[in-house]
Amino acid sequence: MTAAETERDGVRTIEAGAVPARFARGWHCLGLSERFKDGRPHTVDAFGAKLVVFRSGDGRLNVLDAYCRHMGGDLSRGTVKGDEIACPFHDWRWGGDGRCKKIPYARRVPLRARTSAWTTMDQDGMLFVWNDPEGNPPPPGVTIPRIEGATRDDWTDWVWHETLVAANCREVMDNVVDMAHFFYVHYSFPTYFKNVFEGHVATQIMKGLSRPDARPPAKEGRPGMLGNTSVAAYHGPSFMIDDLTYHYEGMDIDCVLINCHYPVDADSFVLQSGIIVQRNERLGSAGADEMAVRLGAFILKGFEQDVEIWKNKARVDNPLLCEEDGPVYQLRRWYEQFYVDAADVAPEMVERFEFELDTTRPVGAWKKEVEENLARRAAAGGGTA
Figure 1 (cartoon, rainbow, N blue to C red):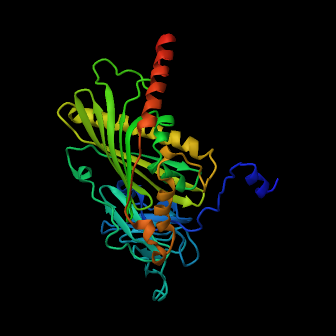
Figure 2 (tube, one colour):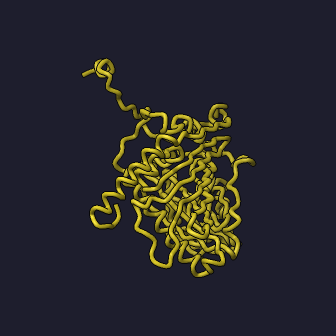
Figure 3 (tube, one colour):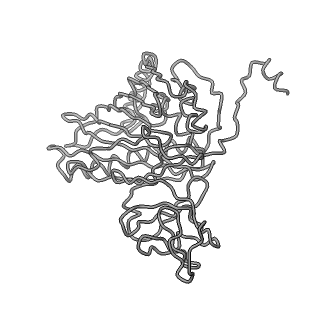
């Protein structure tokens, strides 16, 4: 059957172009910075290359291409010596700026002895690198906001998880506008949903209720969860900060959730999540630490549900949408700005766009489904739905 015959029959075909040949321009988080500060070189596979991360004697975290420009030795298997990383092959010493600083057995260092060095940022306990296929530095206005709680004693330390995903990282981004998947995949109950895109920032504002049909009742002595309020914003193509409040009986728990990723290659990426919890009188210090671990595991389970979808779904460039699916095409147009040259960023990719989804129909349908699930559970003698 030809494509024309298929179209005449009214069957919509799935369009799926090749994944981008370049990696997104912007700041990418490689994980908690503390893991790289042990005085040893670390391997990170990212952006279709092998990188080495090391802390030099001056305390700075540096990221270089892992392969020595001399004869290809793997710097990530070398040794940190002072402010340089020493190649295990011939002991050539490379500085964080990408220049060869010393060759112990040579009278001089060749003038062109340079390797690829990445712009780094150590902020709020996380290590960021700047990627730009054109080789330009980050513009002044393209920043990652500071997270106040990450440096205060009245917040917990980061609880952090990483997962390697065999998919293109665009699949992550569609969740920014996809309200319905929160109900069907994550068993939450959104009641309010709004998106705002402007410049390099894409924001999702969501309020929701707890799902009594999908979660066991609260244990005796513990308050039940009522719902949550979330203001989550992607600052660039890969780093999301979510100011997240869980509403419990008698108290609120304020958190900051990080959802971020970096590409390994065109067909895989490392998905990361981190959470900190604000301490309060009711939780206490130890209780807040315990809550951070519990919520971190809860968030990880949600990511695992996403991953199961991503690894089995098809890439769809022309999704067939209903009114309640949100601004998928507008989000993808915003996301495209990170995959074109800076000179080719069109106004419609960065101009302000707002969309508040009408939740009347979804909320009505989901209330009915929850009630039916609870009725079946009661008839079966209890347990989760």
